[in-house]
Length: 142
Length: 151
Image 1 (cartoon, rainbow over the protein chains, first blue to last red):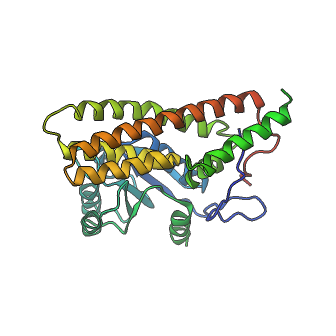
Image 2 (image 1 turned 135 degrees about the vertical axis):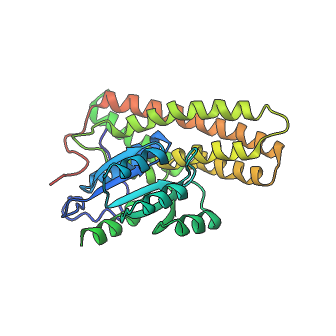
Image 3 (image 1 turned 180 degrees about the vertical axis):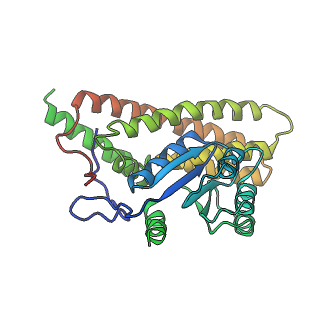
């Protein structure tokens, strides 16, 4: 297929090249939706970020408990059983110093407060866009 | 049909999806992620979307048959549905998800049921359009130049 004809705002292309991080950055996507995991993972990898994806908060916490570290963790708000904020809270309690981004299908101020209080750095509505993620990657890269 | 003509038709079909409000900018983001290493990324993600969301639709249909409705459960289902619809750029479906959620919050059963019927309609229309699009794209064959360079 390979047709892109639309606008590519935020992709920071110069001479047809896509933005890519300079350092070795890693990310973890935590989302119970397969499509969301696939698209967020693909976006981060396209910028050179080594990205893993898990379906549950429990799986994320287990990974971190096993010693895995990530530059960036993106956590869906409404996860089954252990929700997003709880996942963030437990990750921080284990000493995770990652940038934590809470993400949701429907933005709600109470959810935002809950996520930030749990230790997240930002909270946004889906989709994860280049306009939002490129500045974060640049910040982590520096 | 001559290949260039097929590609022109394909481009017109694609543009109509945006002009008629079926798809938004997020679909273009998916196209940007397609390259030599992932030449069928968009179709794969859309196929995944229709597979996963068909289960969600079934769950929501069943939940809407209960009396009284469990609005919390419906809200959770719709949260996931909207998340994945947003991720492929399904603009009209996404709008119906938002409307449905408003009715959920208001505890409006009729509103939920009516909106869900409309949602399923938009979902099916988009599915048909995208299936036709991908089928024609396969017939037209890949373009000579990749979407983007990885250099």
